Length: 310
Image (cartoon, rainbow, N blue to C red; front, side, top):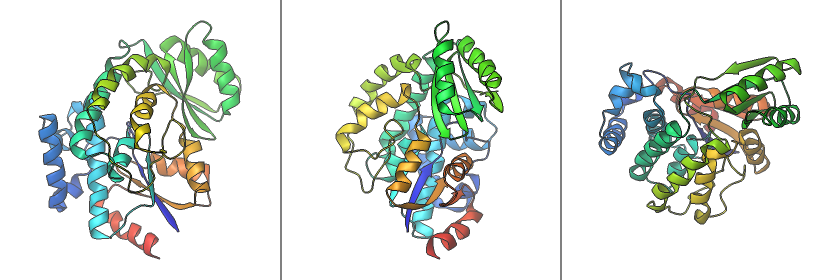
């Protein structure tokens, strides 16, 4: 039985995330203190005190990364659980790289803070949008996006599950694609509360600016495979990390394809680590034959231990 950890992405944040781990385990406080010093802000305040900065991309990303990493460290220490492979949704890929030993927390926290800032500023407010399209296949949605893009750019940004795709682009293009998707039989089209048209070519300038930050980071070899959102395969080597993380900002997230590849590579159990249980539900919709759990609360440690050690 092979186990993979999946790390939460942006949108999973909520006030109070990770607080019970923070209150119970001194190593979690130490991780928060380290991340707070790197950011020069009180991260516990942002995560636990109904702070509006929790929903600002530049702080959302290091906050989720810190919580997810801290929970994983507790799992390793208390129940002796380490993964055979790791992946994440967009931002979560950075937590996966920390997990694998390839990226240090000291490098990751400022890196994702910078990434969040660049992504937020890439397109002026109101000019970009994203929407979830439920119940329409990818082929039909690609056709809609191509047709709409003649006048206003829109493209698929996330391949989450067979029945859930996300479009992203110029606001007008996204709204037209939503209408056309519903006309073509989509069950729902829901505008997402995000600050920009992430994972499209509109974010390419942010990706180019981000290469300067990545250039300063030294990545180490992997302790176990890390899967890329861009290729849906595991990283071939550390040399590929910088180019793939640059591309990830403006490329579609191939989450469904990545999970299918991990299953094909022998993964039988997935544990979503970090706030929320979105990835858990995605995996269940992709393949009902695998075991899927999530951990975001201290009281879930025992359940995870039973599943893994049974």
